Image (cartoon, rainbow, N blue to C red; front, side, top):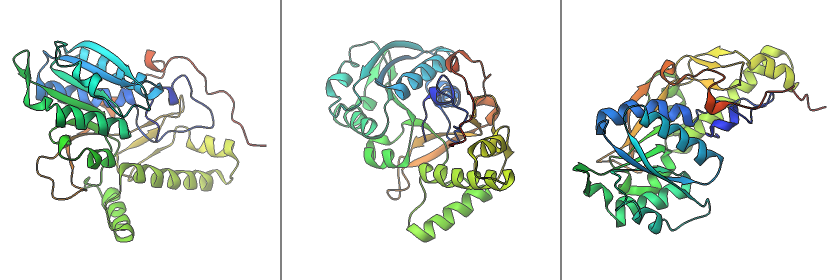
Length: 291
């Protein structure tokens, strides 16, 4: 479930395969939608969780939005254990920015968005003659539910969502709902899919030996699991597939109906070369058989 570029960048390992998408893919999917929705003349203020995911997510979304004309006004690192973001968000008001980008996840995102869109009510304000906007590059259903009504109208990205209408997604959503009484999260989908892919790799390799399993996964292409035609690239063990751009719903029907799909970004739009600068350094090394 890691989303940091480094997982399949400088920290990639022969024994590691990532089905989840990454920060670069979020930026590549979001930037065209953000330009369409908010224009190319925007000034963005970033709050960024101070660890590997925050750093690489911020680098990715800044590069992608700057490529469509946005200016990055400031990037402020916030402690991972922080719960009160009022001082950080207040600083945005007189910064000259008209977009707040929250490179926060989990509780960080819930707390910072609740203050920014709730108590400070940034989305009702204007800056530089434009309506102020907030962007959350990485979404989850649990985060959206935690943020409540403050998530309405806020754009972000996701790996998968239960509202997809392909047969694989519909089947998984139905079976999960029958067992647990609610739609599956994108985390549940990722865990389930990875279990299937591991089991399939063991069968195709004819072994549980990690190196045999790794060989079966390298360069493996498949479809039917909810994100369109998918590839586990041999160079870095990153999974390439379609990425979702989401928006907080204006009129959710229940706690599981907080987000809507704005766009299914095709895999080709989020692909990058193995030697891309954001993923430079590191080496897969040799597989460890566990012996």
